[in-house]
Amino acid sequence: MIDVGVFAQFFSLYDLYAQWETSGVFDFLLPALLIFSIIFGILTSSGVLGGNRGINSVIAASAALMAMRLQIVSDFFSLLLPGLGIGVAVIVVVLIMAGLFMSQGNIHEWMPTFFWGGLIVGLVIVVTTLNSFDWFGSYWWQQNWVSVVWIAVLVGILTPFFKETKSAKNRTAENTVYSSGMNDGRMVPIR
Image (cartoon, rainbow, N blue to C red; front, side, top):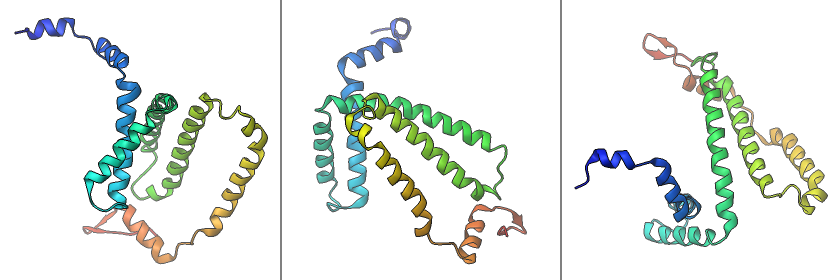
């Protein structure tokens, strides 16, 4: 039997990662598992095909395997996921720093800032990943970028007109959820 000390002496995580990389774990297996998990989760939670998990798993597995046939899918995930890790780290640091200025009574005031900040970080990651594939240097993008920007601006301008305004009752209910000021053991809404 191999002694644990001998095993620990010659074992290296770098060698293990290099072996996994040469055997295709990072290029094929992990992206396929990610695609499978996302598709299976969507099919199971939406119930589009019924509650049969076997059918959902077969469809998710076949979609993941078909997607992995193309090298561009593997390249996309190999560029996207490191950027996603960096983006999540940035968001966590921002949340920790925001904790210095936030209290439980004013957390609802910070929610739009966190949402838009996370959206901007996500857009930067996606644009950087897509730019690695020269999508923004393509002929189509050079001809149509002005139209795309105008459509985005119009959507941004028109979106507030389609949102419902909050009534006083809804604002009070929202403030009650986010406030935890204790007054004789009961929740006190912020006015």
